[in-house]
Amino acid sequence: MNNVFVDASALALYHKKDKHHQTAWAIYERLLNEAKKFLTSNWVAYEAISILKSRASHGAAKSLWDILQDAELSQVVRVDKELEKEAVDLFWRYQDKRWGVVDCSSILLMERENCSVAFGYDHHFAEATRQYGFTLV
Image 1 (cartoon, rainbow, N blue to C red):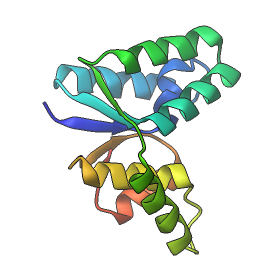
Image 2 (image 1 turned 135 degrees about the vertical axis):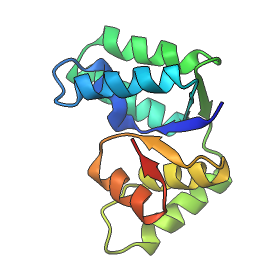
Image 3 (image 1 turned 60 degrees about the horizontal axis):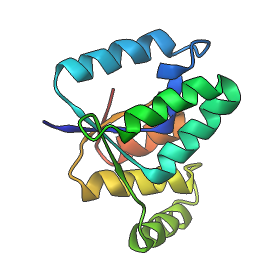
């Protein structure tokens, strides 16, 4: 089973009014059928459920949280001090980019976990993944 990193922007899956909702569901189902396991960080998970709760509903955020807690489907990696420091360093290194610290931590986590595929829509994250040679679905 190969991991697919899930960015907070993939929350379109649980936000029925999001313009990417139908596409997100199709991608999610395809990845499940391919026996992919979803990888993310605790920072991304907190960002996603917070946004989803405010834009969609408490129930939608809870549904996403429940999937993230299912060890057969998902692996949520806690951002440790080392990854946090590296992410902040990366954030400051790219003066010409609008990537956030969470995006930087995600890129570094993907490298650390040998994960080359990401699921998300955020244009900052998409730019970062392209620059680092990852595939975005």
